[in-house]
Image 1 (tube, rainbow, N blue to C red):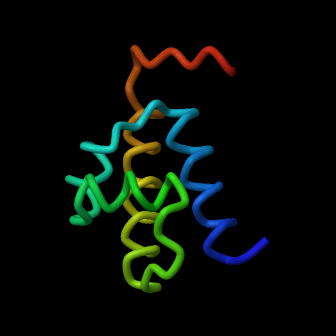
Image 2: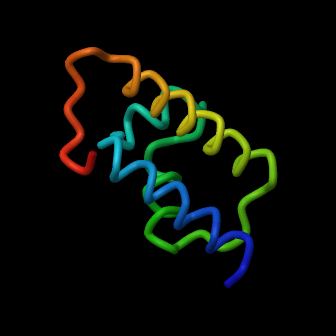
Length: 77
């Protein structure tokens, strides 16, 4: 599996676990919602390392915010 595929899978896993929306990710990362949708669907195979880092940072930030919400209920835990 390539670095891009690993990254895409990791982002999707966290996104699904914490129910992060594409709009939330776009706002937090500065990357367009449409581009994120295409990337996570496997239709973008050559993202820049800068864009991948923006998505990683945004995903981590949003997931951390979810963890800190006292009313957050995650059925997986």
